[in-house]
Amino acid sequence: MFRLHFSVLMFGITGLFGKFVTLSSTMITFGRCFFAVIFLFFCIVAMKENFFFKSKKDFLTVLFTGVIIGLVWFFFFQSIKVSTVSVGLITYATVAIFTTFIEPLYFRKKIRRTDIILAFVAFIGVCLVVPDFNLSDNITQGVILGLLAAFFSSIFCVMTKKLITKYSSVKLTFYQYGTVAVLGLPFFAVQHPSVDAKNLMLIIILGVIFTGFANTLFISSFKKVTATKAMIILTLEPIYGVILAIILLGEKPTMNTLIGGVIIFLSAFYATIEGQLVAKLRTK
Image (cartoon, helix red, strand yellow):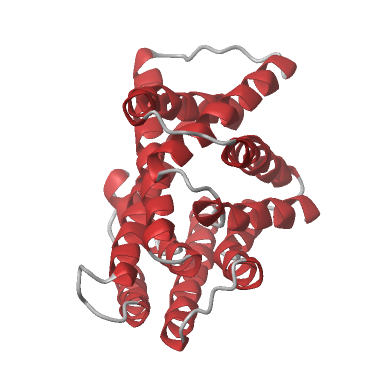
């Protein structure tokens, strides 16, 4: 259980790097994946696992999910850059709501009435976070970018769910992050950012510890706890992140942001529990 909570805590800290690192969101995403891939490469070698896939279709699907996760992290960090860590994490928490719609569409199942109600409740929470429905407002921009990150993350989760039954998570993440790193090279060449020692060290820490190691730790915790419990604890990520942003960055979320965040959190929490219970009942 400690592994699980510690890995989720690290996921929550990830958002703070959007403020700590002064590079662009594109470069943060590229650097994060570049160093994570190096870490995962040694993990695969240590595990004596092969680097091959069973079919060309699976390989191309993994590469596509790599593009998707790249978009997720770009929008996520950009959301935090233009607004606050709290806004970015709270709006990203809607990923559970998006998933309840995208998963049945992807697997050609019927969307349930409960999912529609949860989406409506979460939408109320999002409306509370937005102070002014004006695209020139930085908080509004942060909310939109956070929702885009959540939307693409739900697509990533649903597609990866099908792949995880065939391949190890380490192999999948190696190729997914590798795709982002390769696609990020042209942006690195064009932007040619001036990376000082502080930013470089933060990017290495983000990539190795808070991406490669955190994901490996999170997945390894599945051996000790059920998937249901893991998903429930994962909903604590924005809470950890918001608290740390208040302590370390001195952020002061507005009352509306906090109330909206609670509504979104409760919606995501219920969607996670209810979804897992339904899945269990179907297997009985």
